[in-house]
Length: 300
Ligand SMILES: C[S@@+](CC[C@H](N)C(=O)[O-])C[C@H]1O[C@@H](n2cnc3c(N)ncnc32)[C@H](O)[C@@H]1O
Ligand code: SF4
Ligand code: SF4
Image 1 (spheres, helix red, strand yellow):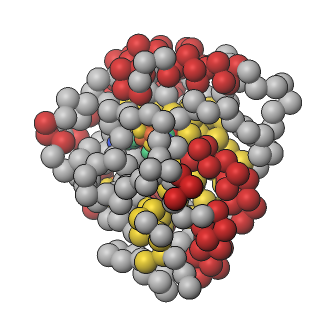
Image 2 (image 1 turned 90 degrees about the vertical axis):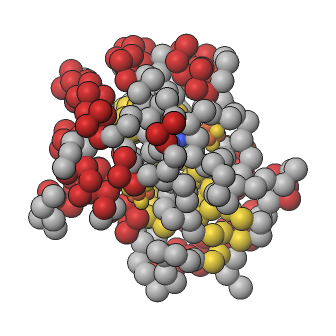
């Protein structure tokens, strides 16, 4: 038995080079912008993590999905995936490449040099904490600073750019650039379909352009530290952005596995069911789009 039901855009016969998996619907934070806990997404958490899909069933299911779809790369997410670090230790053995995206409040574990941690911070301390919770910035930095010098797993920071933090991104870069953080990526808000009322969301992609230019300037100033490619940022301008998101390359390449009771299910895309594609600013979407263009597969 396979504890996964693929539906909608996703198919049992399709090949997916990458997948993302929510290993738990529990989280110790409740961030303002979080797409996971939007209504209409599979995100129900039983009282205890112990009542979610067991480690053994989850590992067996992921192994079967890997073999059926040819999945090489796994992005471990949640909720907060480090709440299930024992599962992660075994899970990362199953895939050629692995990324754990974490809120960084739970101490990192050395999973060796091939595992990449992506740690979420959404601005300098005051702004980050207004989005992610009081004291979170300090807790994350304390955890990072406490890592031993021979800690092998590299870690990068990911910042969600919004209308609210776009003018203060360099403060975050300056705080991190000389620390043990290896790189930064900027991803842009993926608004809900009703995002017009969300103060963090730009009304349209034209309005977002100023924020994209700010990140481009940071890329120019800190080229080795900011990981977004310049072309991926250029593609966020109209009319390219709308063309890219209309043919979303992330949807075609990444299988999203959301936890629903005793099985995995597939929402509309990695960002769930309630998304406004046209204004999507997901890093992966534009990074893959730029790569496809480089390889001559498409011209946007
Ligand atoms: C949903 S979280 C799960 C992993 C972990 N709890 C964390 O916060 O890193 C994965 C990533 O999505 C980002 N994210 C959350 N809501 C978002 C949104 N509306 N648009 C774009 N990224 C978002 C988070 O900041 C985080 O970097
Ligand atoms: S820590 Fe991650 S999963 Fe939890 S609420 Fe924040 S963004 Fe969402
Ligand atoms: S919301 Fe973004 S990632 Fe999801 S399908 Fe639309 S463009 Fe792709």
